[in-house]
Image 1: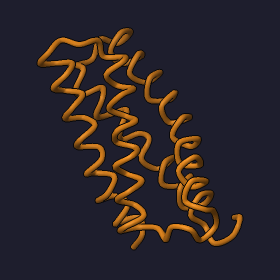
Image 2 (image 1 turned 135 degrees about the horizontal axis):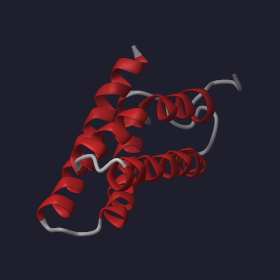
Image 3 (image 1 turned 45 degrees about the vertical axis):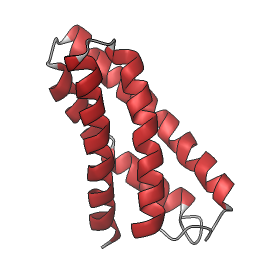
Length: 126
């Protein structure tokens, strides 16, 4: 059941991420690289706060400030993968910006869920 709730929470964060990305890049013409970083970070904050309300129990394994740092460490790897994926799709394969962003965001869903559920919010280590 947790993964279903996380899918909903992730969907909300992803919608905000892709929506803002689309607005700033496709409509305003801002450079995709910086916009992608900014919207990814915002979506990570939203995902964290919704996750501790609806999916995971906060404070089980770490104090709140340690949880936030842990989430952003896990998300930092995801951000690197996101940016590399976007670069390959947009610059090399010349795929539409929005389709590329949706693909990159969706591809990271399971990494983010695994990192949060097994490392940050787990009752025990593995």
